[in-house]
Length: 86
Image 1: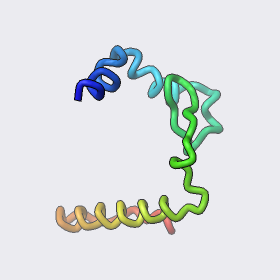
Image 2: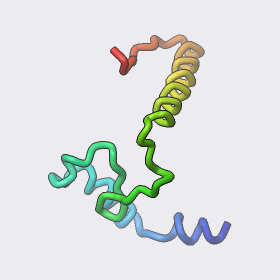
Image 3: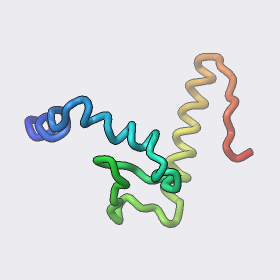
Image 4: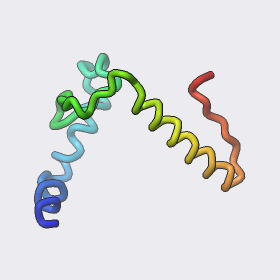
């Protein structure tokens, strides 16, 4: 637990932690990096485990996520209004 605390919770100050988010929101040079992730004010490097060239995993994740969200909207009696396939 101490390792996680030291490396993720107190590793950066609040301004340091916010800097990458702000960079990704306002830096003009990130305009052509849709779908990538950022780390320390730059484009992060994906490991081979983080890539899904066949799109099988991302489609499965989307299907499960949409199903869970739709079920919750139904439970809350809210309209299901978002369908990216249309």
